[in-house]
Image (cartoon, rainbow, N blue to C red; front, side, top):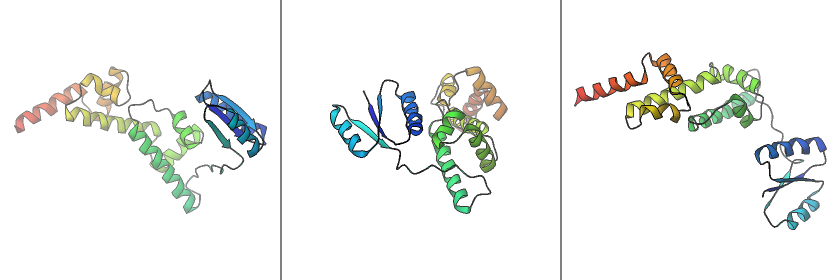
Length: 189
């Protein structure tokens, strides 16, 4: 079982961090100590590895600025949103919620929505949907993946919903698109 020792003089910070830890690992041990010496003694008493978190010396996470921030702030915001976009591209098949993505940046979902729309000129949902549809189109063009599996690989559990979205984006059903691709390949051969 994991054990966490949180070095904090402030009770509210400790409680907030311990709640976050217990949400992720409900069966772990979390305790608060007030100084490094006490943390060392607690860690020595445990047989299992102990994670010591000194929240008194963590650098504060500044919020991402809107466009009116300094050039450095705007560059940092674009960089963090770029990291988020890369994460989304790498996890298209996973459940991507606004809340979960906002937690990755340590900001509120509303603030993430505002930032994303301001910097990318599309909503976060539109961005994810467009990436998923492009990936689905690529998978269909490759021809190696069964059509019934394509939707699941790009994050859609409902085949009919995936089909509606694909039709909305490309004006053709996934089945007809695959047939069209296969017909054009046969003509070339």
